[in-house]
Length: 544
Image (cartoon, rainbow, N blue to C red; front, side, top):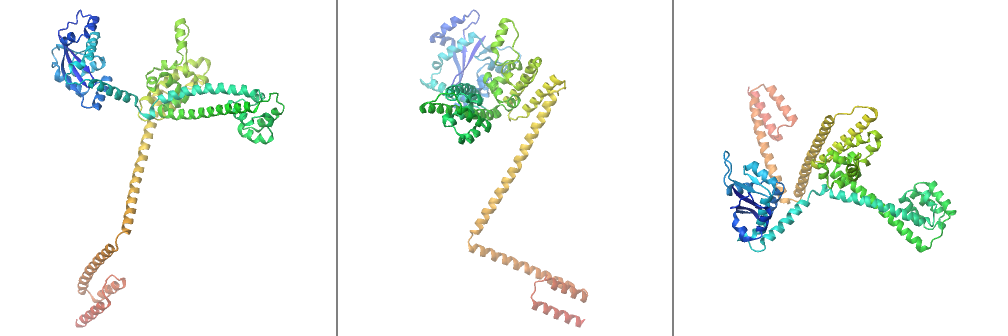
């Protein structure tokens, strides 16, 4: 049976024919040793066809498709053109050797070409990769290396470059830094307390908070100089006037030793550093909250931003967390306890990082394991929605949180919770309604934008009209006056016709009609013409 080899290089697709091989009895080590000799390898493997890529972008697209296990149209046409045709009834007398089994299965499903991937094929393709520049005679030395380098850079850049707003790597770094800052701030605060307690030991018992202690130590400086004038400043720092007065009384009867000005300066500088670190920690926490609302809004609304960030950082990424089953997510962070329990055949842990959620603490001792299992199930659903949904929203996270609350009530009071399918249907309806509202809000904004454009065009036209020459305005007025004159003439002709028709009727009716016309001012004849007509009409009546 003939064996063809498909090699995906950085410059194009290559199809090679391996003839004179008997796979039965072939030793992989023997093939591996014979690969290095080009004379022996060139007699067995020969180039059949080569399809170069059109551009670097085409090479990147083909590389992405091959890495995902998909066959492109170009690869399909290349294989169908150069390989023997496969008939539906007969068994094909050849095989196609590949490195990746995924793309091999896809090629077999679409084109019915039998594909093979094993150690023997891998060794042959390794030899092709080693001597590929010798198979293509038109290649210049260094061209293949440049193509490989360029494609490697573009492929790596495309893999690293995702949506900027949903990069979970920033969350992982932020939560690591937050944990480090917590440890550092605690150790530095203890150092400030120990250092300043040599001078003012009573302050430790009065002020318990580390940040407030550092601010108070920096504000007080020398305890001997503390007077009642500094009570308002201490009140602003501590938020309690009684504590400020208590500090003043303690400073008067303090048993601490006096410090030199240089020592006090160093203590104040160190206290300022602790304050700066605490403020930066607060800013970092706010940044983490905003990033979590962009990356995993449902998971953050379900168990909180910090616990959700810890889960993502422990899993490695949001995608890895979404791939984890709920049983794995439940014990994330408790791997040591799990393997110790498996080794000693003891009880396995019930929860890991998920224990820091408030729901586990609110559950009773006998229900903590059940609550952890249920919460891990909902966290798995929320992480998958956040990872694969196109539009991020907190609707599903809020509904899942309501379900966890109902489950707590069920464990405590026996109140039956709602079914998951009903809750998800309600969440989907709310999400769809929000999308429709967003679309309806966008339409009037566009219409208002068009109206504003029309107004702007009218205003511009008015400005241009003001800037018109006087000659053009006069020409327009003359044309308007001519049109008015023509209209008046037409009206006069119509009035004459009406007068002639009215002569046939009674004279009394004629007089009434004429009087009404004159009173209303409908006819535009001059006064002299009206008098002439009256005289003619009176003569006609006398003749009759």
